[in-house]
Length: 123
Image (cartoon, rainbow, N blue to C red; front, top):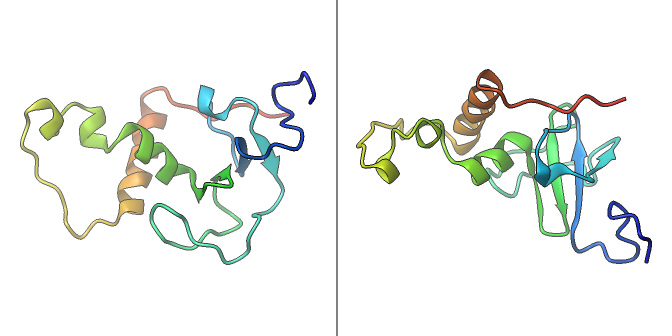
């Protein structure tokens, strides 16, 4: 086994890949870039919408293949949760029952970018 923490050797159980832009967080440290999606026509394991080659994606091999925004929302919660305006904080909020998980996830990504979240600069 290599001493390089980004090199898993033969053990692929914990490899993180990304496609598109790399989100700047410890969860993505050591992630390997994919030129194209691994499985053409695959669906996001979180929102079940199609994975397209022109979007930012995360692959937690072999467990999860998802859109970046869906991954972020699954970790940090909704925008109302990030603003501490949800039932977790004792606040009853209105939510749009017609909004898909992915639509909410895109709002999370936009909110994170507005409040200091960022993509890593890659060479």
